Image 1 (spheres, rainbow, N blue to C red):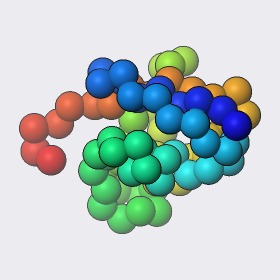
Image 2 (cartoon, one colour):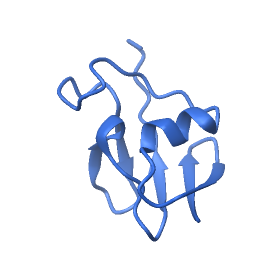
Image 3 (cartoon, rainbow, N blue to C red):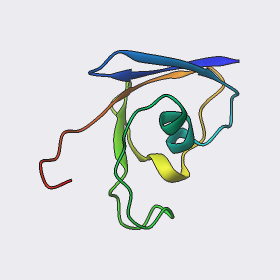
Image 4 (cartoon, rainbow, N blue to C red):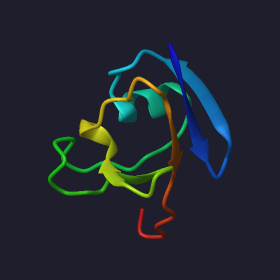
Length: 76
């Protein structure tokens, strides 16, 4: 089990490595907007603690866990 921490609300959830990041966020009660759910539209982009920007709908949780910075987009 690993931890995923969502900022700026500081919500932490435990999950299995390899779990889909977007589904983990949903289980934690964290809203991440979606469009296509295939990584093409980039509506679900989040920033990881190392600065990498990923589409949460197609990103697995790594074995060491992660910190996710949510973007604020007034259009969603």
